[in-house]
Image 1 (cartoon, rainbow, N blue to C red):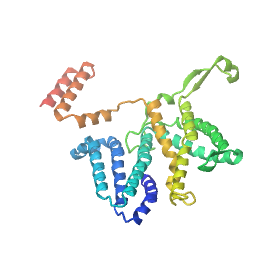
Image 2: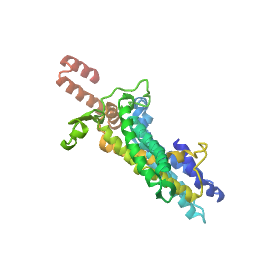
Image 3: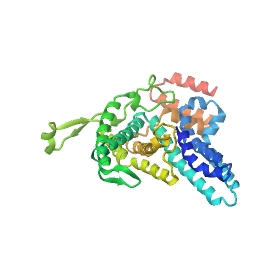
Image 4: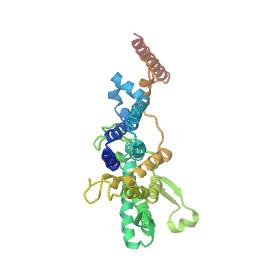
Length: 355
């Protein structure tokens, strides 16, 4: 999907380049895409394939020097771009380079954040994505039912009434979705590795936001509510916050895309989906929603736990064999002092390591 979206956007700017016979323009666009994907996604894949990758020295070296290699690849592309500059087309070529980098920032980087949302738990991908779809549907329904006041000039059919009505409906849907999905370990547990499926998903300790808490009702509202204490999951409040962003801010991603299409004089980014345009036309709001969901999760939800896999990865990539051996001995000594490992077994293991 990422490649298809990038292709649709780059296609808009590649046509003028072909007219000017700038043969390396398209190749450079795709080269910078590969460099960017390698930089933002390779490290995440390495973490989930660590058991396989750490067996090969070459792959371990690539992982430990990931940032430097990524920088080298980008600089190579930069040098090649400068070497392809043609007299009379300087302004056009630099404009093409700026558009490519803007596309990489808005599409590739935000796609990476969406992937991270999936790895943090499918809940944090499905809920935001679903809220954008629900908001779009109710914005249309409320707009044709109550709409009278134009919201923004770039999209004449969008109305203030539809905008506000969709916000209210999306907030209600958010609580319902959160209630249903928060009961599934498959959706709320982070992925252990990339082989996690519905058949082998982990059973984890739920994040505190998925555990019901008691809330004291203000005295003035007790008679109206009918109880002094309510039991609610904190995730309901977080879902409403996500719904507010999906309703009030994410649509501006669509407005941005509309302005971009008007600037290039096109109706749709592509014809991938018959009757609905290209993939970009359907994903314009999702990118903005995905990046916000990632930052929201990292700020208000994440418990920042350190897994055994990450500790193992840090040790193997940053310590030599002698230091790893010393680390193992230190851990064995700690276990022995804690009474988990007997003195006899501790001495026997140490002798094996030193022998």
